[in-house]
Image (cartoon, rainbow, N blue to C red):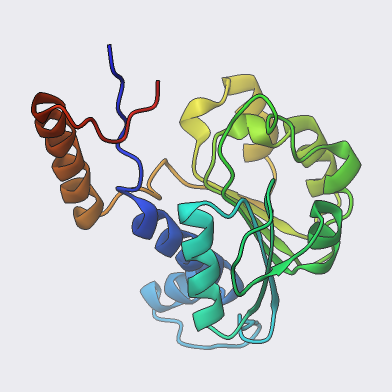
Length: 219
C-alpha cells in the first residue's frame, strides 16, 4: 500500500511566521499595541532591534529552513546554517555549537527523526548567548525540555514555539510559567494559500496513483 505525504504545502507559511514572530518580539510590538489600545501613545521605554546585519542561524536546511534563510537574507541578516549534510547554498555552514554561540536569532527547522530527538540539549543550549531569540516550529522532542528550562531560567534570552499541543501537560507547564517563553497555538502552517496547496497536493497524489505514476511516496 503506497503512502504519500503532502510535503511542501506550508513552506512559505511557516517561514513567514518564523520571521513575523521574531519581529513581533524584537520590535516590542505587543507593548506598543497594548499602550495604544488604552490611549497611551508614548514610546518611552520601548526598545527595538533590527534584523539587518544580525547573525541569523538556521538549524536544518530543508525546504522550510532554506526559505527562512532566504527571507532573513532579504532583511539584510548574515545567515549561517547547520544541517546534517552540507549544501550548495549561498549561506555559510557552521557546526551546531558554533552557530548556537554566535547567532542572535536561531530558527529550528529540522525534521524529527531518531537522530534529531534531543538535538538541542544541556550540552549545547548553554552556548546560546544573551539577548538571543530561539524559535522552533518543529516537534518538541527535538529540544530537551529540562535543558531548555535550565537555560531559560537565566532570563537573558527568548524562546518562541508553536507546538504546545504536542507536549505532555507537565512538560508544557515547565515552559509556560517563564516570562521569556512565548507560546503560540500551532498556527505557523496556517494560511489561505497553504490550505489550498494542501488540497491540491492531496488530490494530485490520488490522481497520480490512479495514473500509475505515484508522487510524494514515503514508504
